[in-house]
Length: 365
Ligand code: SAH
Image (cartoon, rainbow, N blue to C red; front, side, top):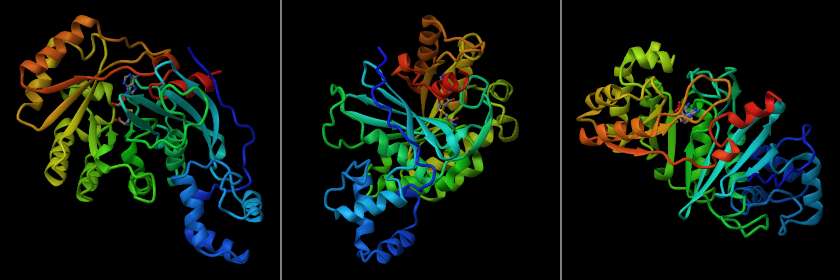
């Protein structure tokens, strides 16, 4: 069942979102109106912690100030163009950001976890052949505020079992940077956004609960490792040898598997965090027992965990999901080879919750 439950009207093109405004600018704006600098903190707290989506609802601010704020700023600059909710309480937002671009983000609610899946770019430049996000290339990087606003909007959604009534602000427990775009191609903005996500006076999410999924850009992986943050890294492998990987993940032509794996090992050495390897199973292309054996040999002896992802159908693409039998054989082969492996659960499939698919269905009419 698909329930469109929320369609706020009115794009605020003319005014900047508050999270886009630099601290000094906001404090100067407040000073001009005779307000103390501490109001700036109060305002950000309302957005990042308090769940406010309007100035009107910021009840401890003077009424005139709330009106003045509404004239010059939007609390959140983005607009929810479409909101879908699946019966398993997965929510998907199609969000219109600056210059009318569309991005997607998803809230997955499962066994006490509230996981936000967020985008980092409009489109994607990596060109993985099976992925809907990159079919039209990359448009631009998202700003820090555009990334944080996805988290805020997802956090503000109702918890499991609640229809539409607000039930207080429930915290996000996890973030997966697995939406549209290549996160490491927009690393600076992502890192700044994650600072707000992890800050005590921000969204308060533990770094160890944040997963950054990358196509595998070795130089950027090393840079991330050197920061010593406790983020979890997932590397999209998708093939056990260079020939096949370059066919499925074209950027492999420049990087090569060996360098991607070496960078992942470096990440583990620097952070102590075990790396996850993602492997999308595409029927007959990379899902055969021979591939599983080759993958086992490639990963044996490394501190690695494999996440198998049965392909989610993308309209217009010729790829198919693996059969139940080949998924089973693939999983068993890895397990028997001593590789830690899990098959990713499918959530929200009825609302096209997988990468780039909702935007595609909208932009293609
Ligand atoms: N650019 C990042 C994030 C991509 S989305 C990366 O490459 O890791 C997160 C994961 O979903 C990636 O492993 C990606 O390859 C995978 N994915 C993309 N489209 C998919 C589809 N249609 N079915 C299954 N997995 C898909």
